[in-house]
Length: 259
Ligand code: URA
Image (cartoon, rainbow, N blue to C red; front, top):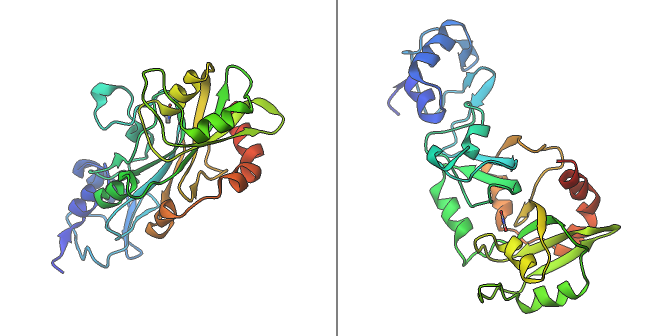
């Protein structure tokens, strides 16, 4: 493979500018295959070089996958005109040029959001053919009612007359205003509108799983982590909703309430 300049290699994979890369190299903060490289115009083999910038490896894998525990107040957009964008929460060494949020959470919602530069996986994720089920935990304004279970299973009719696909809900034990919901589709503000149709109101909402990919307990709100391609494949695995609710009730109700 033809050799490329180190600064080109790094700037194509991160948000570092060439002038910043030059500075970092001069300060000895960049290594290639274990050796400090002080000149950013050094030529490297892009296929084999192990480049580390400020202690972070820029793996030679083609795509990047970041799981963010989105806080409230950020928008799932790449356009800063829309408000504070979620990409701002990704450190520059993890961000890549073409990175975008694969899917949406409302500005006021929290929880699992995948950001990637892999258009193919985003397409697979968002395609209705794959039906990636998503689980949310909500805090309601009024107590959960057991009759919700049947109503969700039959398909809620929203206030504007639109009908939802069957969905599942499950109350969180000993917390009368908390519930888990599993959806197989993604209409605009869907969870909020479903509970509004039942005369309730969602006060807090956190997405806690995307298919078989569960928001890690240790990932605090506002933090992100890099996923390997093989972990991303968990998205396409099923999740057992009842087992999930039992296993994660305590963890996610605490995360939601203490956000
Ligand atoms: N449903 C909503 O109402 N909001 C979200 O952010 C996600 C699902």
